[in-house]
Image (cartoon, rainbow, N blue to C red; front, side, top):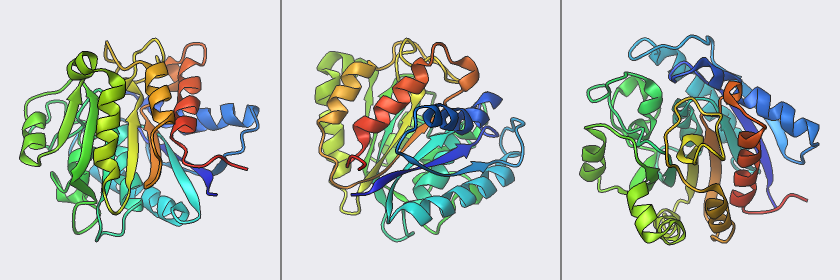
Amino acid sequence: MKKIAVIGAAFSVGGAQTGSRRSALFYRQELLKKRSAWLWKSIIWQNTNSLQTYPNGIASIRASCQKLAHHVKLRRCGYFPVVIGGDHSCAIGTWNGMTDGKHPIGLLWIDAHFDAHTPATSQSKRIHGMPLAVLLGQGDRQLILQARAVVNPQYTVVFGVHSFEKGEPELMAQLNIRYYTTTEIEKRGLRICLQEAWRRVAACPQGFGVSLDLDSLDSSFAPAVSVPEPKGLSLPILVKTLQHLPKKGLKAVEIVEFNPYRERGKRTVQAMTTLIASLTPHKNK
């Protein structure tokens, strides 16, 4: 049985609030209080806590993503990696660390946003709005860490999206990536849609991962996020569904965009712990 190895991504340069930089440190302190059996391996700190829009933040984000990828790669065989972020640009490091550059993996991207902008389509120029595009081999080459895409579009699904801009749906259509808006989820049911999405990503022969942005959840369950969006997913239904999904092929999980300075009553911390437990393939002994 693989034990959970938690790796912190103290990232905020590409995000909307500097508070996300403290996500891993704050979460680590909370788990230590509870004497969690999960193993903390490291926290990757960016070299600055100032927010920088494209192209100014590229050097810092590339360097920190390379370091994060290295640490994830070290843990991917003997452990089940769980990355705690930090703004969502950390996904560039996480999923590069989970691949060898030859065999792209599947990815379930649970998020209120696509995060699939390129510099040409982004209005804000924040790099945390670009990581999925980068993982698919699109956008600025300086952010693409390997010779080819590390995520296979055939086995990639965006789930829970309901805030996006021109250019992102078009890229999804161009790459034939399935996505589920909250409108479709409300109409068809979260359980049915998630089971369907899971089957698609789990069909990847090289395995798959889950990248979950906390802003995908209804804010009543997870208020401590940097870019809150109304009418998110129901945490109880999401967790109950995840608990019963087959975990074969699941390689790693990341939970991102936790901003501890916006926490209220430890609701977000509790949501994170519950989500990780529901996504863990094996229980720790």
